[in-house]
Length: 192
Image (cartoon, rainbow, N blue to C red; front, side, top):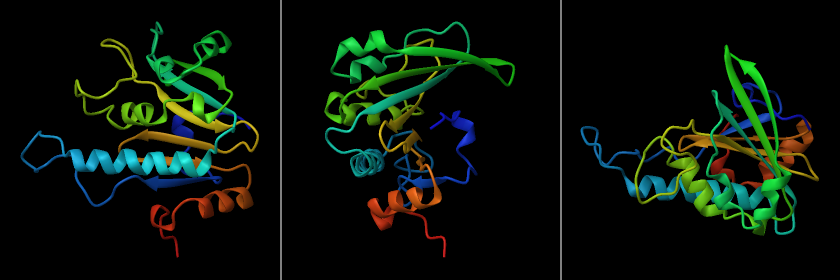
């Protein structure tokens, strides 16, 4: 399966958008900058449920992340992978997108258990809301990476882009339908 740039998921025929939380607000009050921790707990829990539904123990996963800009500074992604030797299996490619360099990094992970999933999903979901108590994927002067998880055998993709939602992508319409059935019906949009 070819890897999509993050901007290519929206409207793609084999993708489905999923809201991670649609009833709570990220802020406690409209006039407040205080974060609603209940909202973020629900978002991370739903992202974890999606990940667990799409990837089982023993499944090989390819993690792909895109970083905009030049020069590329190290991301903090490897702190969420237990097997540190995969750092040496990372491949990097670059292209130009909207007159700006776009770097794509891929790293194979042998098993779901090699990923510290919850902290990684927390760092993705909190990316727009900096808080010292939550993990981060970028340093002070680096662009936030956009992370996708690809099932190496079956080819499906989970792309949690931030606290607002995620995309799943199948390899065919039938495969996408089977993925949607794995996920809790309450998480899937009503398209009838």
